[in-house]
Image (cartoon, rainbow, N blue to C red):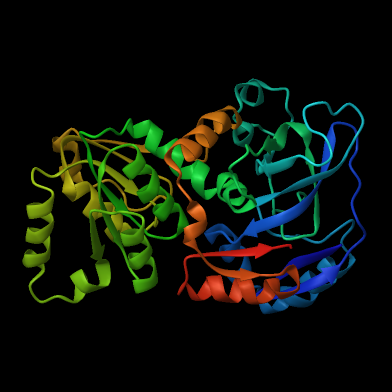
Amino acid sequence: MKALVLLGDSRSEVREFPDPKPGPGEVLVRIKVSGVCGSDLKQYVYKVPPEKQKEMDAKFKDAKPYPPIPGHEGSGVVEETGEGVTSVKPGDRVSIYHYESCGKCEQCVKGYFMRCSKTKGMGQIGCQGSFADLKVTPERNCMVLSEGLSFVDGAFIACGAQTSFAALNKLGLSGLDDIAIFGLGPVGLCGVVMAKAMGAKVAAFGRREIRLGLARKFGADMVVDIDAVKADKNPKKIWGDIREKFPGSFSAGYETSGSEDAMKWMLQLLTFDGRAVTVAGGAPIPNWFIGRDTSIRGSFIMPRGMYDKLAGFMLKHKTNLEKMVTHRFPIEKAKEAFETAAAKECGKVIVEWK
């Protein structure tokens, strides 16, 4: 099979490896779409200390069965099943839940595979990722795609869509809410789509015209260019425009960028008793936050058992996340896919197999 290998310092190669085989309880998936995630890019740009470079290159060259193959946003077709597999069969279209775990502990039984003490994230050392022709995964990680959901939808479901869906469900959004969404990468844009579908009025804050344009396309009621706010000599006018369109402050906030400034701005925009969720960390909580009686939660992807609810939501609201894809590459050009995504002048970047 062909697969992408990350070598550090923004270097990557597509290499040939032996085809994997599924063991008992495992499924072999022929990948059809794999999306490039921001966390993949952190691996991609990782600076290898010069004294470690030769050692790292040698380790990757001789690693068995594979060196680290990135990717955790994969969907495809079941090619083969191992002994004892009953929930999927060859030919089924699936999205792959991207944390593999023991399947037996309390957290696994609840569907929180990412909380398992033995969890392994796809694309990390010891768990092959989805930028490969083939991927072996536990049966329980296969989320069968409903009719009406594409392989691109499946790639979003594997990470970006599920992250936003789980986070926004914590906010309990409705038509009574105004929400400020910070960060317009694919996760933030998924938040725009889903918050609108939940009935909320949305102000989207981000940078780069291509992503601001996508937020508009997905129905954001107001789009704010953060760079323009910083550059403007009269920022009160911009904030006045926001207050005019969203009087009474925001009842909800969603932060996806990990920016300290974005976190502070979101908290300042929230009304008393407002609520917010973050999936990316950010600034320490400021002192004035305490007096506003605001609540803020962290959120980390979704439990496996939430998939049917997410799939139903996407079908009901015709979310069409594929409109977010701006660049497509074959596996042979996966290197170019990462270069494009790292430049950030894009929406969603995917590798796809015809």
